[in-house]
Length: 235
Ligand code: URA
Image (cartoon, rainbow, N blue to C red; front, side):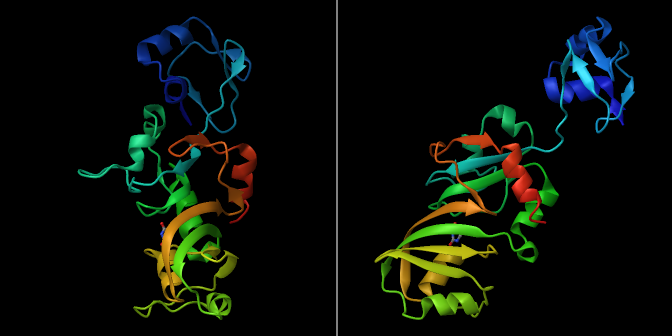
């Protein structure tokens, strides 16, 4: 339950004075009845609130995708380096979004943003096996048995064991790597352990949702209901 004026302010961001004027003018209905008390308690999950006859849908949580460009660190604040927050419009920052997992400064591609901590945790946690797909360019030659080693679970140079992953060669110097966890520099280190040096890394997909090809580097957009539905059914 929450106050009607707080509910409207969370969404419309008009300020208390203007909102009270709107409510007192009888422009707001709750379940079809005009409600002119700003402190009226509503149930944001079940009540239908309309302003001038238009339903106002309350979304507690927000979800976006970004096409992360090179040169930005995956953080919301840094004293010295440019961060992905520099690319996010103020109205979205005001929703207290944060990145779901991390891409290296020189990695590009799909980055999810949300203010839903449980969702973020589940997308990242190896427990939920959400697949992250990367397109890598590399120098050097990969071992013949790289695919098998990836399938078995790579052991990194420092002894760290990775969960089973997939390696698909797509060219002499490029491949696609699918992982379900996100250790530090994981894909670069996995490729290094079979003989390659990553020269470019781009995340194409998370949990079956591809990066929108219409998004230019640095742009963000909300996830569609269909995309969200697909991700939510993964756990
Ligand atoms: N693996 C890496 O090595 N870097 C990234 O940015 C993401 C996955």
